[in-house]
Length: 198
Image 1: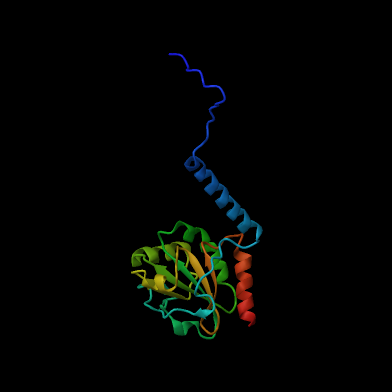
Image 2: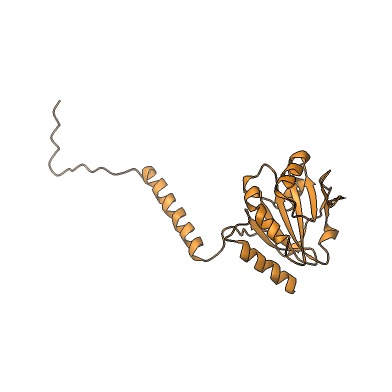
């Protein structure tokens, strides 16, 4: 089979269809957006929350059954517990890998004078949560259980772990998405100090 000669004056050009280039354009746009976020100096682990500067959602979570500290039951979590002291509320679960990674930083926070450590155990069987805290240590003064995830919805939880800072009036002032790490611990501690100084 031989190639047919092209008529004079006509050339063939191969054009890539627009649909073939579309993924390339989308990738370039996302890469540019990512670059802008990085250069703006914002911490990507801090996600804006509609609850910032609003009272903490109505919370009445029962204690984690069987969890004790110095022979005394560790209490659950209610809104009244936020009054008069700065509180860090950590949302965790035993099935959450990053929760294990951040646990040493929660234990460091538990040593901060004047900071109440509270937790919401999110969609986690009681026995698993107790075993998790027995294994890694319990840095929390209060642990409320959220078996069905309803409190998580009220708090705007998008993933586990997340940690909120509540001021002395019961207002959410800061939210950290993801685990506490060596990179963000000092910044989180600075937020606590700011609230304690108010």
